[in-house]
Image 1 (cartoon, rainbow, N blue to C red):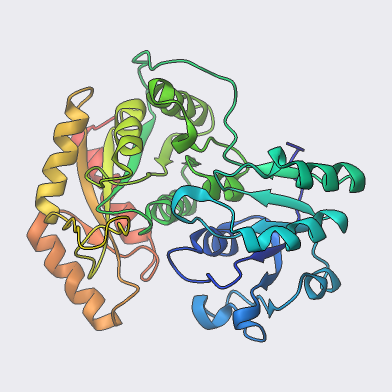
Image 2 (image 1 turned 180 degrees about the horizontal axis):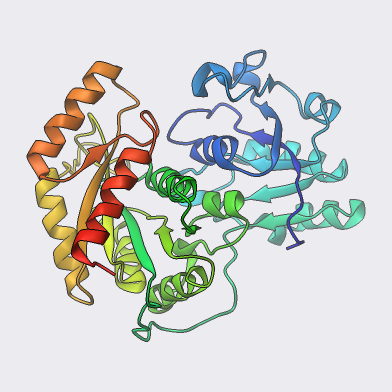
Length: 358
């Protein structure tokens, strides 16, 4: 991968621009270092991303790649994270067109675009680069129980379900730490986080024997960058498809503390593989206890705060649910996106200072 320089991105979401499937697009637009010049999605062309994400995000939606190139795009980013990470077959033509036009193509799919003969040939002829963020390094090591650096405070975001904001919460808390004059570090463990931060490993691609070891190594790198370390969570502990990656993160990062992320109104796991089979989400106090028990099998850790995703309710309802959740769990609770991360981070910092967690 080339050293990161500021790119001018067009993000492809054709027909899938929504909070769930397009979480990669939304994350990069909100938090990425690159300039986003356009969203490529003919189904909503002529509109603007600000309609969904707010006035800060002035990104036009275009119908064709040529329109995006005319706006100055020099890279095409695949903006979806579909179940199974497969490339939609109907997207092949636009990817070839981008490579032939010398646009780099950036992908976080499990389908490695660089291994596709047609894409590789087009890139070789034009000199464009294909970046597959989920391609893990050739590093096969199990966890060794490395102790944390003295003074480091490792905090892992965990969730009641997938795709509800664990990365976003970690990024917001890192921002709050930095704004408080502290050395905050965001640890990317997924493809979107890597696109935003410019480093990391997509741990869901790791061989299971080496998953915890990779998570341990990522925290070791982060401890060289700062004291307040916010690890991006993945999956959820009781999700029927994605629980293994959560176990690996908990036991590999051995966090001093965890922040439980939950989306208000969500009652069942997002799992559409077998229609009619449901998996209700457990009550938050039960999830708190479950995560602490699982972590304690390797190293003691506590859930010290709850971060709510209140995007589907009004401001008044959000404040009410925050109060109710604090009463239900006995933990500091807030929505760090809607109301800012300062209050939640302040509570987390106070917990470390009062209990000497690290």
